[in-house]
Length: 146
Image (cartoon, rainbow, N blue to C red; front, side):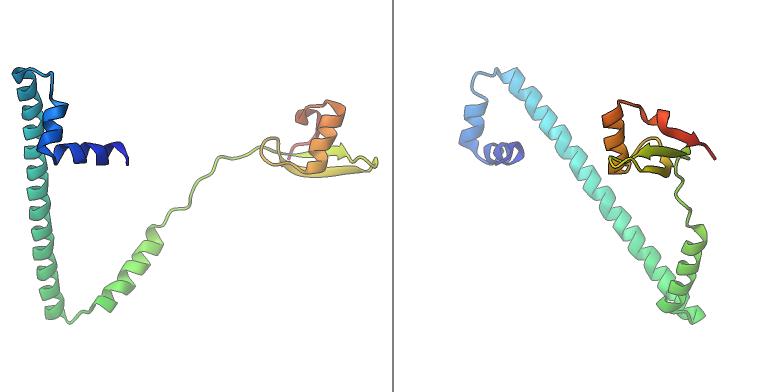
């Protein structure tokens, strides 16, 4: 049981509330009550605002449907418009430019190999073994930069 469930179990029981408030003076209980009442009024205002918003949306949707009937449009006609509009407004995700280099390293068998990539991120296992074996840093292996 998480803390919210425990709190709700206490608040739903008069006996548990009495036990919880044991030791508090009446003015402290009044402060708690005023905070709970304020929260209640905020919640009621939020619920009323949501109801008004839903009614406005329903009204707007009814007006749109009526206008669509007048113009002889269907939902399928709108689907074509929204798909093309979405395709036009879709932005490409921008990535940070990585500086890439050509690295040269030696395998355990003595074969020299080159690898093109960034100096951070994943690297070939053989290159990591070479760095570990020789004690070099990856920047020591840079052969060329485009």
